[in-house]
Structures are given as structure tokens and as C-alpha cells.
Image 1: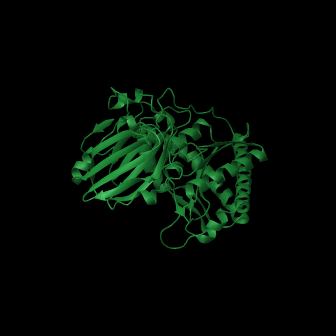
Image 2: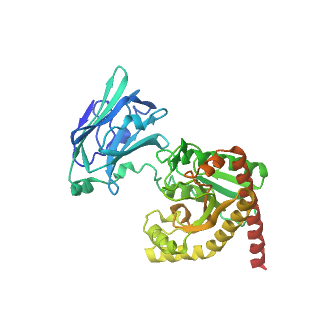
Image 3: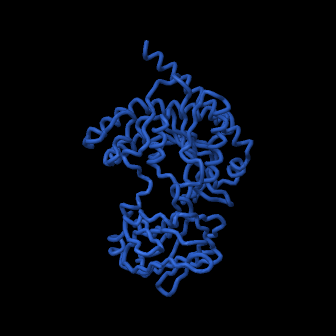
Length: 413
């Protein structure tokens, strides 16, 4: 049994063996890594006066860590690992101090629970205990001051589970001209794992986008002339920057991020194609240039050791060539989708989506429709409609590639 009391933030892997250390060195513990099942019917999250208490029933004990995040206030619990199948968050959460609760896969080998906090809380008790039914995780949260919460909030260094080391990071595929092999298409099913995306009438955006990406992959593979990679092939959380890293490692000629959003107010129907807004490009360059993993920003150009000004200039130069190619790709998609399945009254839009900020590959975001629209939900749930949409995207990619090869050949003359 491990029992800890620590104000503000608790960020450690916990185990049940004797002599287990707390902190980064706890990663060396390897005895508690089997998949545990969570049972919502035997769990509870309730208010006890101003205090919030949680009891989570698991089929067996597993390592876990807890930390807090601010703006908005959240408490994050990572497990290695938990099967959430059948876990009903609505039955589990009855605490007014918790405004939202999400569970799901995080990265391979890890699962996550996120508690949205109505007010600042500090963790005063965390305990994983064995019993004859498996294990129980109990937590106790007490109110705290906003400034104290903010001071202790933040992702601890040893919780950066998704950032590979320089040696382990996937390397970009060699650059080549279009036409010198199959068109490399990276499909990015939006959301996943702990992030369900939009939800309406039992339909989750993360499941719908993965289903469509798999169907589109099959359509492209059957057509021939395409090499297709998915940024996620199962219900896992993949950080936005990691999605771009995977695309670059695959040598993507095209990056298609697939979504099906919902709006809280008003009405919206039909598919939409998003490209990166020109007004967002400067901010995107600046934000990317501030990061340490600069070798990942431009395919074939290592920005390690370059200052922010030089990195920004190099990325702007790359966008000068990529932006018109992206616009032509978006136009081709609009033409084919509008003719095949119909589109939103404004089929081309711009936004500063993070997955569109890669400066060196044509990238678009495809909103297949809106889950907030009953009409769109019916279409998105129809395999025949999705097939027609996949065919339209296939034809758009072929037409775009032909156009780009012709322009490429013209520039060489």
C-alpha cells in the first residue's frame, strides 16, 4: 500500500511493491503493467461537504500518476494501463465539484482520466490498495486558493510520455518529386482516446473519423497509385505535433486531417475544407520556432541551433511554395465533394488549426459534416454516403497530383 499526502500537485508513478521510490525513478518499476479493468458500478466520485472524494474500482492494481493543469483547471490521472470498456462516466460522476469527466486511451501502454474542476482543489490523499476483488484507488481533494493551485499546476517532466528522444524519433522519408512513385497520403483521424471530439446521439467524432479514415484508406489502396498511412489506427490519443511528426516520417506528399464537428448554436450542414489562414501563419511560425525539436519542423532542414528569426524565415520560405499547392488541393477536394455528396454553403474556409501548421507539406482539414445536424448525422452514419465521399476524395487527389506534375514539368522547361 502507498499512502501520500502532498498539497497542490502529486506527480508520481505509484506501485505496491516494497521500496518503491516516488518520482521519475519510479519508471523503473515494471511489475505492475498488465491491463486492469475499471468498474463504474462499483466506483464513486462524490462531494463530502467542500471536499471531493473518489473511489475507483479496478480488477487489479496498476501504476498511476496524478498532476494538475490550470486554465482550465483539471486533474489528470495516468494509468499503466486501464481498460475503460463499459465504464459509464455519467453514473460514476455525482460530484458538483467536478464539472466534467473523461476517460480513454492516451498513448500505447497508458490510459488517462481527466477531471474538470469547478474550483481549485489540492490532492491531500492518494491510495491504491489491494483487496479480494482486485484494487481500489481512493483520492481526496480539498479546496485551495487559486494562486496556490496555479503555482502547483503543470505537466511534470516525467509525464511527457509522447515525446521521443532524438535518437528514437522517426526520421523523415527521403524527399522526391511527385510522379516518382505512389502518392504518399497521410490520413489523420481527428481526436481519439481520452479526446472523443464532438458527441451527438451516441455518435463520437473520434470513432466516426477513424471509421472513415480506414474506409478511405481501403478505397485508395484499391485504386492503386497511393501509399497510405494513418496517424492512428485505433482508439488512442495522439498529440497534434506527433501527428505531424508521423506524417513527415512517412514522407507525406499530402496530409488530410478528418473531422466531423458540432456547433452549440445556429445551424450548419455539409462538408467543409479548411486550409491554414494566412493571418495565422506568422503566429504559427513563431510558436513552432520556439520549440526545441527543430529538426522536426522542416523535412530535410535541421533547425537545431538556429535562432528564432532564422527558423521563422526558413519556414516562411517553405510556406511560400507550399501554400499555393495546398490551395489547389483544397479546390480539387471542393470540386469533387460538391459534385458527389454536396457541401456546406461556404465550402472553403481558413483557420489556424494546429495540424495545418506544417510548413513543408500540403495540409487540409476535411470537416465531413456536423454532428449537431440531424441531416448530417444520418449521412455520416450511412456507409454508402461515406463510400461516395471517399471516392470523391480519391478523384480529387488524383486530379491534384496530375495538375502538380504538369506544373512541375512546366517549371523545369
